[in-house]
Length: 342
Image (cartoon, rainbow, N blue to C red; front, top):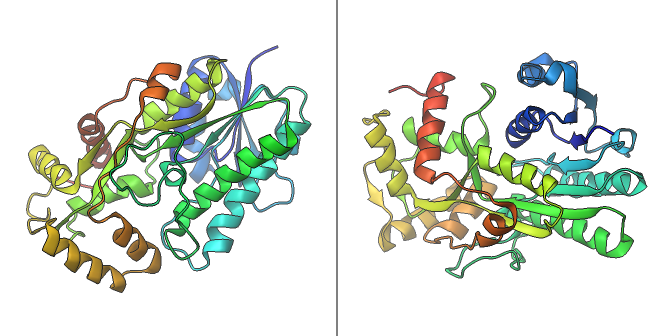
């Protein structure tokens, strides 16, 4: 029987690259999207090599009562559909409920299938930590500090992944669960759509950051995240959670790299507020930002992530691109799509 994979949220940033890699290996893919007939959201998928022969797109909405049961005659499921937004009107309705409900709907559907052997959940480092504190983060760490008021997006990712592990422990389904926890995902895009992580680079280049702040980001290339999902599918020994991140770069380092690349040097931030006094000022100024952005700044200014990615390298053989390489490739792609210029 042909290997067949269900990928939810198929028109997403990570999902598109994963579908491309999966089709390249000759697998059949069933991708879920809200509206398969909306070519403005799906044309890039149909343009992938092998898509006409091996790709099927079906309708599914995370808020439906049972969006996935009709589509689980597959060998592997990659559940990637989940809302990603920092500022929302109602965090419970807009973030937590669809993330948790969608995850449980997928797991219940998988448990009813006689064919599904593995479910791979795309979680996030947001489920590992709410506020880096210098400790070396591993797969054993959990975000226990986020709430509907404090980093609600982080809260939604932690709640959804907790719900998944609780389901497996309680129901003991025939499939096994593997979770990928990426840090900030950047990289070339298959579409002109601008994802939230790449937008940060666009905003820096266009002068929307007034100063260099004490922000340090953990980066991972979208192509490496896709490779991690493929490896998790193919390696029968894969188990548990996987920290999926390459390395960290401070905002000042990112700005320096962008200046080196020649992008909008006149608009790149020049004032350095990454020191103790500047960080205090930025924390105060964060109170004037929308709730989600303000909460993020207050918990991340001055916080430097530290993590151990040895498990994913050892178990899945993932070799990460450096953040510098990923940023260079990303801004070149952003220029290609017309989002930025030199």
